[in-house]
Image 1: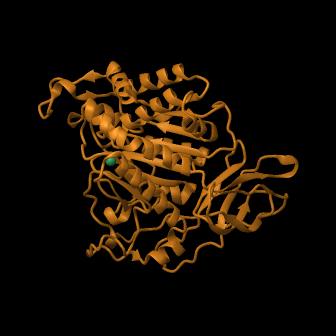
Image 2: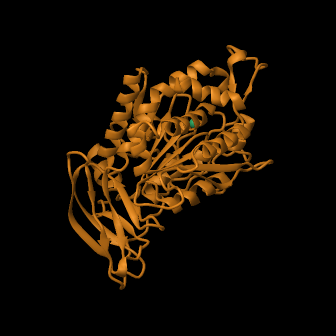
Image 3: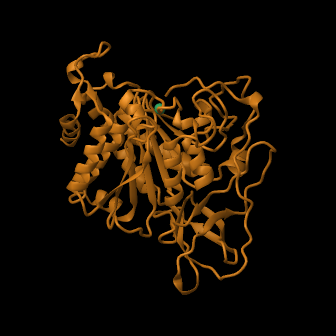
Length: 444
Ligand SMILES: [Zn+2]
């Protein structure tokens, strides 16, 4: 019933394409445009003004320049609270319309069920959900993967960026990637999901570097790989948690009926330089995933019935991964008299650097500038935290135990004393050896 409502809603404001040559059934082809996503978002805020807030994070390349919208859903949407912030995007590749419809339809599902479904009410009341249905609206309008400058925005971010066709002249040289970057730096998302279509998998970190367990595929470019042990020790200490979230997502999709769904480390599938998910994790401390919802790519392959099926495969998996994003370590950092402090909270000791190439990495979180809260999703275990902030003495908290049983969450509130801070060396993007760069051939 809800799925019918969702698609009916979209169809209500969208054109039904009737003249597409390669359409299986032109009468039922769903085609949405930037105006449709905009009017859908406006109708959501009218439907649920008490739990929504719509903002524009920037504008697209091209003429006309389209606004890039984000819809926040939470109780008390006008203020920041001590809650994990979660991001979900669609349409970074403008020709992957299904990924945009997934975001809009999930929003509609959440709003329609908030008053009657306790699980949804808890999700909304205890998190700050940020939905970005269409982050490449020029691409949506013009049915292209790229923005108006022929750049693949998922190759334009500042972690392990390389110069290749469609990557831009430099990292963050496009207005869309700048807008997403600046918004992320303001929000310190605990979890971020990026939707695509054209395959069926959940794709985890990293995209630019991988383990030797990579599908057994040996190729001449594949020398930057590591054992899983050194990978966890040096490059991805939260790997077990990332893997458990992906495994749960996979099993929920399978249970819902899509038995072909699979999971992969990004690099194991195909290497991507300058991806959104790598940058978010390395620079912003955000645990990020790429979702490929379905084998169909173009909207001409999509009709109402098929979309309803695909949404049905993913709906409960999405709700579940949102719920799990808050597991790990959270707290509030304050100074004298309880004032909120802009701080960086890092798991210590910093991971060992075993190889001179890539950058060693420790999970971290910036505190929310408005509330002082931080959230580090991590598997159960015992950790030390280092808390650093300008104008405050750096503090270490030892023996923080994330329990193995639910809620698998520990709260560590930290008080800082004014003084001179000892700053960790800031993390800089790895420089990729040009001889190791692989061709960028994939288009999922
Ligand atoms: Zn894509």
